[in-house]
Image 1 (tube, rainbow, N blue to C red):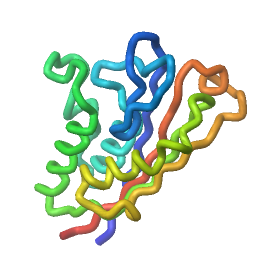
Image 2: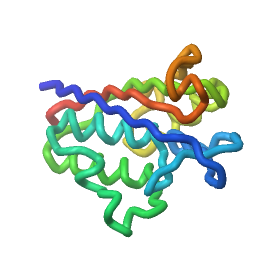
Image 3: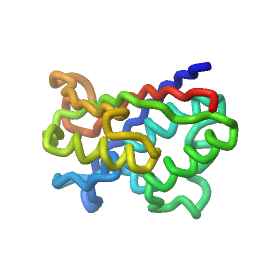
Length: 158
């Protein structure tokens, strides 16, 4: 049986933080606001995986009211969610992610993000697709106030 999950995350830009996406630090004058390191790519993929397994969401597993998750590495959270899914007898198979941001230009970093995510989830880099799009100047993303990420993940009964 194949199971599919969808994830979404968005964060606003803030000064004084590194911009971490898919486990990769991307040069930019602003990072993302959040309780953890605010890696929106890892957060969206975590929700997609958990959703495919009907195992809740990132906020239930790692609530922002819990000080243990303050400044947490979101790739570690993704790994923990992956373990939850594996304990349910499901195997991660692939993911497709789209980052929506006006700036910075992300094309030079997409392959590194895919490699980081693949390594964390124990699949080949060809099983992870990471793309970037702009929002054509519309909305909070278009104004450069933040970014958003969409993710789809497939799991299979192991």
